[in-house]
Image (cartoon, rainbow, N blue to C red; front, side, top):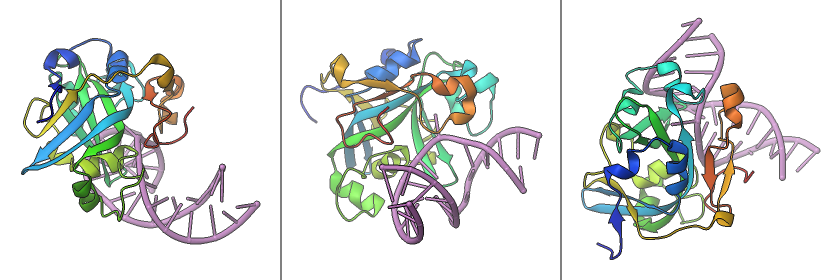
Length: 205
DNA sequence: ATGCCGATGTCCT
DNA sequence: GGACATCGGCATC
C-alpha cells in the first residue's frame, strides 16, 4: 500500500463529459492484482468514445451485442474486447447506466511489477514498447476478455490518484488512432497524450 | 522513415 | 467474405 494514493470512486466515472474524464485520467495509476501479482503504471494516453452519437464507438446508433453489452453498464465498469482477433483492449465505462460512454486506455508508464510484465509479454527487456499501445498494455497488465463486465472497485483492477497533475502545455489533444472509417467523427480531438512520454503510441499529432 | 503483411474473434452483409 | 479502437517483423527507400 503506497501512501498518498486514493482509489477513484464511482463519482469520478459517473459524469456526463467523457472527453473531460479521458483528459483527467492522464497521470492516474492503473493497478491490477491477480493472485497476489501486482502490476501498476501511470496513464499517459487515453481516447474517449462518446457512445450512441459517435461513429467510432462500438455503441454507435445504440448498437447492442454480446460483445459490447458491458458498455451499457454502471460507471466504473470494465469493458475489455478482442481487437483484430488477438489483442485485448481495456476500456473504462463512464456516465450512468445505459449511457455507453467509454475511455480506451492506450499507454502506461510502468511503475510496479515490471518483472511480471516482462514475463506476461515474453519481452526480454523493459523498454518503451512494454506498455505502449492498448494491446501491449493489456497483455503486460494481465488483462483479458475474462475481465470484461467487472468493475474498478474490486481488489483486482482499479485506478488510483497520487496527486499527479499535468499542466496544460504537457498535454496534447489529437484525433483518435485507427478510426478513419468514422467519417467526420474521425477528426474529433478525443485522444489525449503526454507527448514527452516515450510510451505514447503512434504519431504525436 | 515508410510500408506491407499475417494473426484471427466478433459482427455484419 | 469483409471490416475492425493492433502489433511486430521484414522489405524497401
